[in-house]
Image (cartoon, rainbow, N blue to C red; front, side):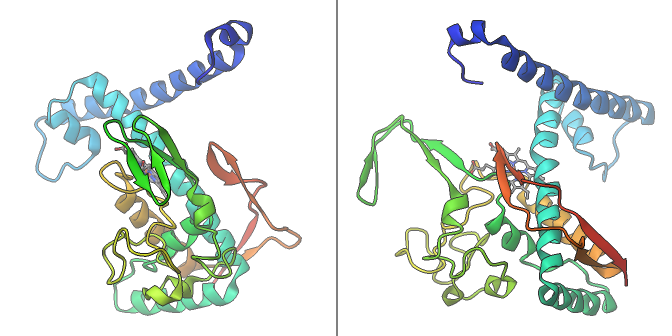
Length: 280
Ligand code: HEM
């Protein structure tokens, strides 16, 4: 809420709404933390294997105010992001029956051998088209840096709209098309979305830009401040998709049109996503 002070006096409503929203978020998290802490206290000392995040924070003797803050942050960062990505994944799979059938075959085969984890690339495939956090920003505080032909003075805020770069046809041919095949790890398929740059031969950070440039799609950010919940998010997405697709065939609601993404700070569906779940 970066409003100049005079404007704040003239227009107090958005600021009050903003504070009210934060109060509600904190109250929600506080309610859960307090309940959990009371349960843990009633149970006695923590045992090995108590893995609830609140238990762990309490075990480390993190002050309760920090636990409230951290749990609020994790809820804020971890709920809508995964829910939205899951909704877009189902939407695209419903519209692409061939891709859905191929994924279902893979899942069914894995289930038969007891090893369902979900397709390896689902989150990356979907996040390239619908990165729930569509832009990211950085300030380099202590030195000027050169990016290509640009000199960026220190203390300059740089915003990268990776929604745009991840739909750039120079890096992803047919950029608006949901094409899980290109997810397969080959530099020449033109899609390394979601790979950690550097973890695939040829994906060397700073490598010459070209098809499948390793920085073209960064839905989870990059570096020490990248998404701390990425692995959890991927696990949730893989498991949820696997469970849903093993039980249901997902189809678009008849008459349901194309849903376009829109930004509301986060990237959200511009209209309700309506799907039919047919039991297999
Ligand atoms: C599809 C799901 C998700 C996406 C696309 C996503 C994306 C992102 C992005 C782009 C950032 C900023 C990274 C940067 O500045 O380089 C971020 C930060 C963060 N994310 Fe996620 N996220 C997801 C799920 C989650 C989940 C499930 C959690 C926690 C349970 C989580 C917790 C966080 C936290 C705490 C930060 C701040 C990290 C820091 O500043 O050090 N995220 N996320």
